[in-house]
Length: 185
Image 1: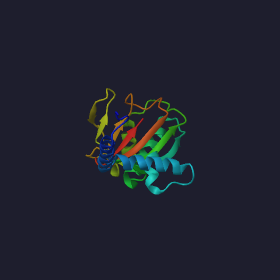
Image 2 (image 1 turned 60 degrees about the horizontal axis):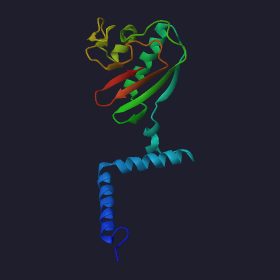
Image 3 (image 1 turned 180 degrees about the vertical axis):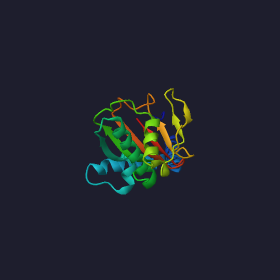
Image 4 (image 1 turned 135 degrees about the vertical axis):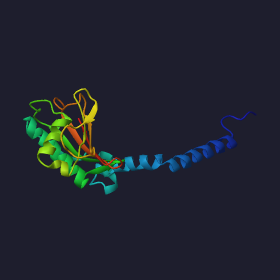
């Protein structure tokens, strides 16, 4: 009579293979991350999740940009960049600390370049705290800032189209490895 189905030794090999895969993935941390994500997602629907769940939805402090004149708009970005740089507040997502998620309620009256923010830092003595010796020019090329805002480059300008004008969200982050504030829009 012929056996129908899988032999016991074949089932044993399959089980051993699955156990080996689980052990391998646990060493790589994949299962821990997945289990944490599932736990935190489920727990957040019931109650306030524990602190280790914070980085899952790491969005930073929310802020609304309401001023549309270019100088006030630049001042808001500069002030939040300085606060992010000095306090390094916000939730940590890998090696980047997300400080602020700034929703643009009113679009700026003119294009805001990195040099606008740096000029405002220079005029209001912000360069004493947050130096920015290199800016992205109108062509998207890093150049030395033509004013006096220190010798270090602590602002990383990662803005689409090189300037802020029509974006609806601006993120201010702190890069823990490169010691820079990142402005994203």
